[in-house]
Length: 90
Image (cartoon, rainbow, N blue to C red):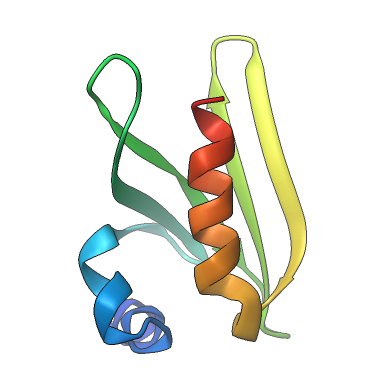
């Protein structure tokens, strides 16, 4: 659990480490909380899942709004997390 969070943090470069935090939910499931705020001044957060092949997916659900991005490769993860966070509040 802590090893995966440490590995996720290592993916990020210095400038973006303060934009996100990761919290363990359960095996292969982490809560990503960003510094980006919704229009209601709440942090944007969503679930990040991964499989043993190093493929990630993200999911956000609130009431009837569901967003999901699948088949994310590790090397694209930082950009995809930031893009996904911005999609949530649009």
